[in-house]
Image (tube, rainbow, N blue to C red; front, side):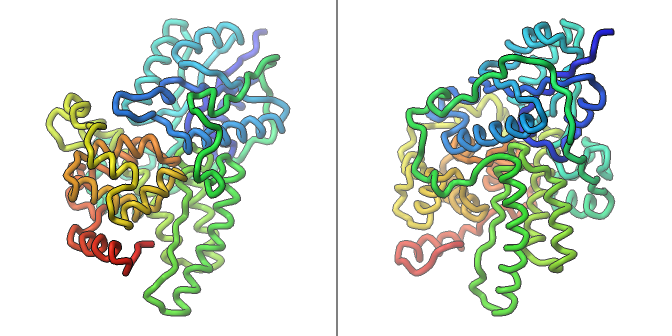
Length: 430
């Protein structure tokens, strides 16, 4: 009797814990073939004088894929690593390994959805099913108190109804045994130079976070202890100069090295030990914002942006030759507040949420540069780039998102004073 082999196509879900797709594939097959594609589309230069995936995020991605591979190797198997477009390589894999079915996680942004559609069309011709899973959100869509088409466009309403009426499910356990498809050549993990970068290192590498499931779980564990300590220190002093707290979990969440549900339940466990505090609340709020933007893109697509003919006007809105835009990108605005944030972004691939609001508000409302220019640049630079969150946040700052009541921004007059004080050296923003 012919064995059933399932190809598990990993994308932004680079983990073993809480991975329904992987658990289901293992239970429904005799053996699995885990695959990761380094799609050249994500590393080619764009017409906007950027690359879709910059060096910081590429390094984080390479570390995360290597970590997933190591996890499979510990279970007696491996991860097949290939360079090329999934829609061009999938047919050969199905034939070579006698694959019965392909599993993958569904995305919501247009470019990622289009790739899935191309693969699905290809597999349909081969009479192979592409099974879709949804594992990027805290709440499953079927557990929401409303269908996708009726999700409130206002975040505050989405938050209130979801927290009141929806339930966060338990996490799927990491598998402790996997049967792998036999394979002699699992492929080589590329280096930065293989993916088009001139160097193998970058300025902020020493301070950069490390990718991978184990690193993410360790960071989360340490963070929960730190979060309680930072908050207790603040409340003990009753100081107005509160020590800044930033979870920096977003890189692992964006690549799926961490499950949102794992973060949620670990925060809840920490609350049972230390009590609720503003730091823990901030982490849970961040998970809700991620869900909101993903569901908004699922509901509206690019109609989320309240601009006439957004898709046709997008290319003319992005202007890489704009001189003030260049100064913003290169941290040469003359305002230390802005330049410090942009230097950190360029060197490390990360800035705090407050920093993102500050530099976005400055670009859009002070320099009068169209917001899509900033969104495209963040796409290249951020290690935690996620299409829905990035474009949704920029749209809200520009005032063209669906949530007209969003507080996702910095008060213009307040920012003007902050800029003036930063020049005089009198203040900084945590």
